[in-house]
Each structure stands twice: as structure tokens, then as C-alpha cells.
Image (cartoon, rainbow, N blue to C red; front, top):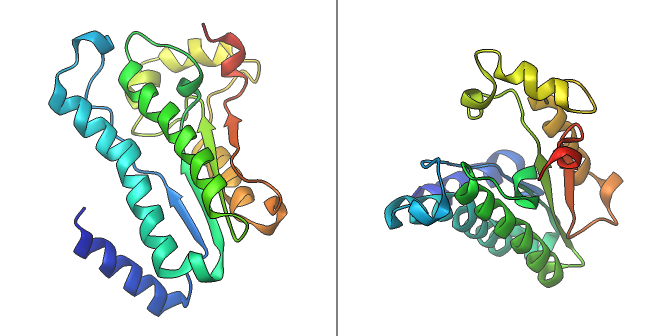
Length: 187
């Protein structure tokens, strides 16, 4: 989005709620499936702009508008894919690994009043990931997981709520896997 749109969203949030205590950076795109070596620069740039630059810009805006003086929590949505390699989703996974490093870097810079953490979902039953689980493919993936099921959006929401809450008041700079054990079977 445009900076004017971001300012309008922040203004309306402050007007409606009086604070910006929590920011969840959940925007993602994956316009390319294939080897990293074959991606064209426009799709590379789009993927990094959405998956890495957008969380940075929103975090900067919330920091400058509220969190620097009042504190808060930032939760970035990364991916289990950040912890391995994948011939089809490599560019997406690269951006999510970089987002974990951004999470760690920001946590080191903005504490103690602001905490920055990441949630790293495995395969979640969402429209965004539908191509990975529809038509029965999800059943085979679920069977290979220790938890024997795909993740649901609520699994990620509950973790993000925890990280945003006072229950996680001594956590910052962490990447929390919520993957049903998917990482155990990667690579």
C-alpha cells in the first residue's frame, strides 16, 4: 500500500482504540514457484517487497507513531520453510528466513519496551496455501506429520495472541515453530 493509506489506518486505529499495542505483520505473496536460479528480477523484487519490506515499514510506522514511547509487541508471520531448502518455494522461503533475521535485529534494537517475535507456521489450511493441500495432497502431507493433521488458522492465531500478550513478556527475538512437527521431516 501507499504511505498515505498506512497513515490513514494508523490514524483510525489510534482514534478507535487509543493505542497501537500490537502489530501482526501477516502480508505474504508467492508469485513464483520454481528454482531460485530461474526467477526473474520483477518477481524476486515483488516477493521481497511484500514479505520483508512491508513488515519493516509497518513496524517503523508503529514504532514512530506509538510504540517508541508506549511499548508494544510486534509479531511477524514467517514460515517453517525458513529452516530448510525447497526447489519449488525457495524464493518465498528466503524471504521468510530474512524475516526471522529482521525479527531478531529489531528485537535487539527496540527493547526493552517493545518485543518482536515471529511465528513460523507449517502447512496451514488457508486459501493462500490451498494449492499445497487441495485435491487430497494435504492428506498425504498430514499423514507424514507427527501430529497427523494440517494446521488450522486458529493454531497460528493462538500463538500470535500468546506472543502479543503479557504471558510472553520475557520473550523477544524468537521464531516460534507451529508446524505439527513438519520441521522434523524436512530435508
